[in-house]
View 1 (cartoon, rainbow, N blue to C red):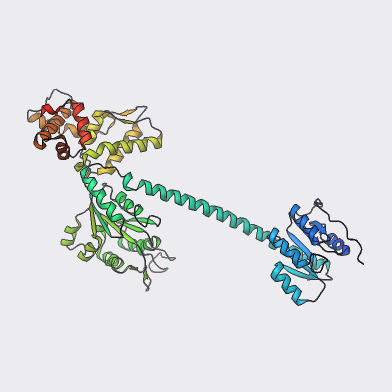
View 2 (cartoon, rainbow, N blue to C red):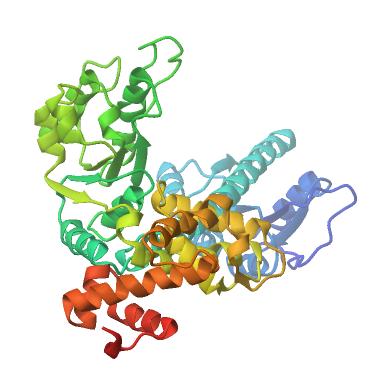
Length: 498
């Protein structure tokens, strides 16, 4: 009959100089428990238990890095105990003690108890210390890996959340609802873009510099079926031909001087998404041939590679030049022109949709003032009149830059006054007034604002006379009917004045 085993040592404090690792030893023989405690107790916190049930209680109460258990014990066997350890503390390493040369028991312990290794009885103390040290080094590495995996999981979750936020923000920012324009010309653009966004058709966007071609391209992408896939943009006129080819199609190491590694191209980077090729008219003939192959076959080949591969990319191109004339001059391939021009969207210059200037100016002012904490909240009538009258050769982009200049140079004003505008914008109306004055319709002694208002009255009255109605006059002047009514009220015009 075996002597009574000592009671479990629960919550034993670490010995002086001990490492903070906890080791649980489970065996029904008191001599073995005492021997292992003496062997390991000077370096580790050792907890002992005479049965599997007692060992599980200690496992629940203490931080245990390693469990050493006998295979053959009354009641719960070593394998059964290890199965419980796997379920309750899967990160704890397990070593089996066995005094039997029973191969089937060892295999069962490895398969079911997931033991780290086994130690045969009797053992040498130095060998036990070595085995335990190696086991705990493995445990430490596993803990670090687990922490890194958890940090990586949290980072991926955070990144996914941020990406989802950015995608939603981009979808809202670049949706058609976020593009400013109530003029008839822009309404036609919106009607066309909303239709083409639902397809995968190649789109050619034309218009002067600064008209917002990139904004329309992004809106088409984020309103379409590829919204959750990448959108990348490349200005074809900003790089030499060789670098542009590498940027779009990628290159292999050694394909040219300085190519010290493989590089993925933008077509590969946005596979499944949309690529926006701005200033497509600036490309040379070799690049045009390569782009034609992508549009025809969906295949690309990296510089220095002999193998082509397929990509699924929607192409949206843009140009500020007359691409048809470029084709006629022999500087652009006609077959590529027609491949790009499946749907053409022509953006009108800002001078042809002046009725959109007030809304655009207010939009830019609100956004920029909010970003820098400015108190500016609107425009005086005189300032807005000059913004509307200016030709804006740089279109919407130039208007935005003008508003940003105003905000940057403002003090504590609440409204943008005429004097806060740049000189070229302030003088824009003055250049129109002399013609009316010379025609005998203006007063050279009157102020600039008075002459501008006089010019507006004549234009509105002429439009009302020709159209016969406010709705017709508003359409003729290119302004919303409601805006015309407000302007007439401010200028003191009534239907009887026609």
